[in-house]
Length: 274
Image (tube, rainbow, N blue to C red; front, side, top):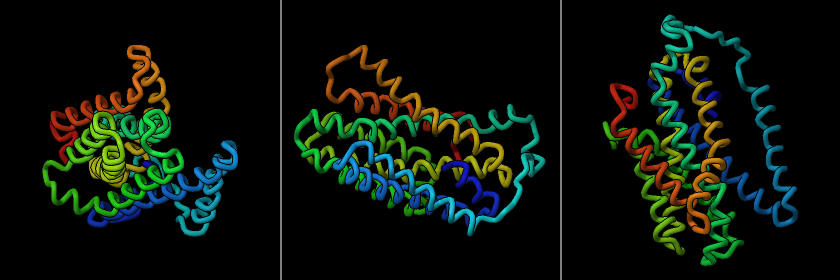
């Protein structure tokens, strides 16, 4: 996702990028709506069939072959990209890379544990889990569409919007629960993801300019998937300290969201100020 979104920086002028970043995030979240619903339907037949949703990737291959320009994008398209090599890219963008790690660590806790926690809580029927999760992606779709407006309305506090919404959403899931806390918390988590991802990617892209697709975007992509990989291990470590807590994943997410908010609030210099 960061790699493909980074191409927007390469192909489009700066004044068009933010709106396109929001649309890209919205399209990604809309794909989540479709995938979650299809996976839920297929899982009712057989849990093995739920993995067939990844065949939708074949559609994207066809679209890329038809519509994507056949360009060769070389590393170091601009002089700025060559300053300091890969170490310079890291120094200029470490804040965005870390924020993507924290954001995705917080977010991935939700889809990985929502059904388990909901089943243990017993308030909401399991048949509605896929519907609520798809609704979360639908709200995230709205967050992507609203990204430009949210960024303009929040001004200098734009970097705090996503972590604050994550923190509030997981507090509702962890400490309120029930129908109200679960639905409101899920909506806030979805909206935070829909707004937060394009903010980080657009800010990092603005920091690197046209070369972003070959400099910072691979690092942000690595950070995103590293967080997805490490989240279960982090949860396992925390589980060893407090076994038996039904909502332990949400408590962990509250902690990660708080760390994300504190970093966004106190990040030095221009690291997260764009």
